[in-house]
Image (cartoon, rainbow, N blue to C red; front, side):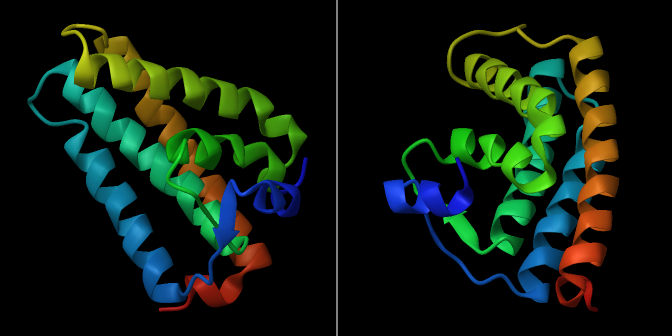
Length: 147
């Protein structure tokens, strides 16, 4: 499916991003990457790193002209990743969806579900994804990267 087809299904709504919004979302990513290395439990650090990843997916979706509806908002924002960056990013969306489920477990259901290795893996993924998103913005939506 395409983002337009998702919108026709009612899963997305139109959204007009601006440079200020994108800068704010990227600042959240930076803050969360810093905070995810703090002296707190791996569960919370994982949740913080997940939030950074979600914000990067949000940047992609907003820059593409859409915003996810509230129902399954995180899921749809993550699943839009390969629709925007290409089908070769499907494994990234699957990884982030697994992180979404783990984050839900450690936030709402159980303690100790995230390990140090989980946090390190996710933060490394987010750092790489941030570079990809910023390069995509510069190539496709340079006005959104304006200072």
